[in-house]
Image (tube, rainbow, N blue to C red; front, top):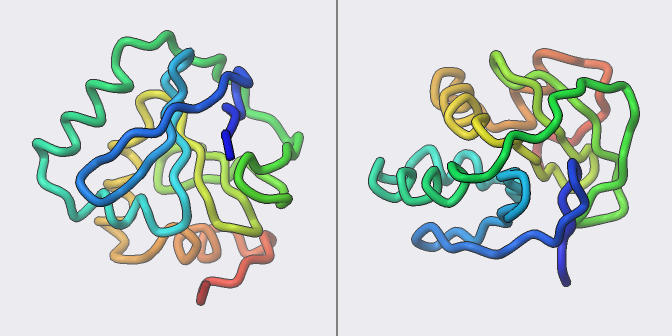
Amino acid sequence: MHLTCLKCTSVLDKARIEDIEVDVCPACGGLWLDHGEVERLARKMQSELDRLRRLLKNQPMPPAVPSEIQTLCPACTGAVKEVMLGGIHIDFCTRCKGVFLDRGELDGAIAAVTEAAMTVPQIIATAAAEIPIDVDM
């Protein structure tokens, strides 16, 4: 199954960071991470994270347009909603708990899960109780 970018609708390329398969947008540098992958990346060595950063670095920035519009998840049939994770806006699927990061947001997402010592769904549930999610998934 090919996933498409939430921002520019390009087909996402697969990349491996050790044992984690991530989906990278070759056009805008966006990054789709399945449930739990932000937390798993937070435990990787900086050299592996630097390799991922290099994959994302040379892409143009996507349009930074915060929106209340819900879009469909590229990985399931759930709704993707823009939410806060630490100090950044991310796109979060309320069904599969996948995360779409715009170029430049990877470090902010990793910092948020590291500092809070919680998972992405737990942080989002704590910060925005109006999003119905199952944090035990």
